[in-house]
Length: 96
Image (cartoon, rainbow, N blue to C red; front, side, top):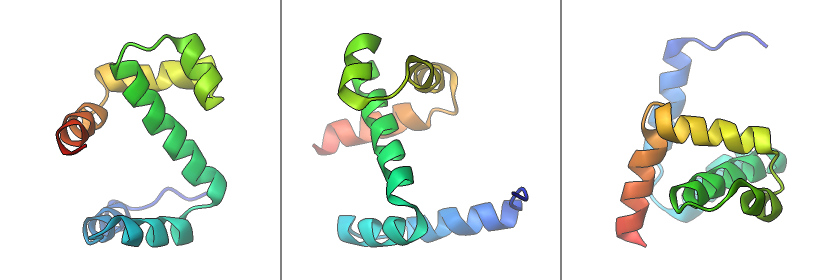
């Protein structure tokens, strides 16, 4: 697969920013992604939430079906990534 241009990446992110409701997100992401890709994203997000709550890897593995390697990767990004997980964890904590 060819590496996408910065323009195309930013265009996708701009499109996501135009979504207004959960229903719009569901429609757009279902057209954009396969069901498997959506499930993978859901499980990674669930993993980030569980890690932030201090849930052990073994419990996360059992709950999500993700490998310990994927959980470790999410943990690494949670601690030393771009800050996206931490930002969204803060935002969703205050809205739920």
